[in-house]
Image (tube, rainbow, N blue to C red; front, side, top):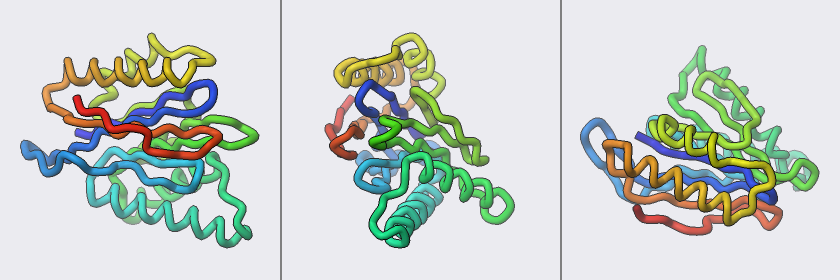
Amino acid sequence: MDSVFAIKFQDGVILASETTVNFSIFKLAKKYDKVQKLDSHSIMALAGDIADRDHFSSYIKRNVEFFKFKSNGQRSSVRRSAQFVRGELAKAIRKNMKQVSPLVVGFDERKGPQVYWLDYLGTLCDVKYGVHGYSAYFANSVLASGWKERMTQEEALQLARDCIKAIKTRFMIDLEGYDIWVVDKDGARLADHWTV
């Protein structure tokens, strides 16, 4: 029942991640973080099985930190981190499949804001906006009609509000809150928590 989406704007990325944990007909938790901060300027949000999500996100974070250690403090690019995630998901298909669908977002000095959409099979796409979870049925149409080149951060936040409103109106499950992350030249940070 997860809902995570990212919106690229002119100077950064907005990432919204709902915080409810549901299993079948049960609500297990109201406030649960589905976002893993990979380094100072990149984060990964995951939709999928809670055990796979926790294990896989921790594994990716440790490997990104190990890359930084091996390269004398130079952090991994957002693209390189996304490609590493893709490779690990593709390897897991034949060994121990992970039921997770990540969004890797970040900011690089050379490439600016980036959003990478991945699925559980290891498909990797560089996108302007991305959605995972059941919310994709509702949020993709809002994003397709509302996203535009050179959006400001305020416009991207309004578009995120519109997506959440569409999900709240149309989805049968009550997703109670969203963590709102901002990633820009100043780094990745949890900007707000919206209760709906």
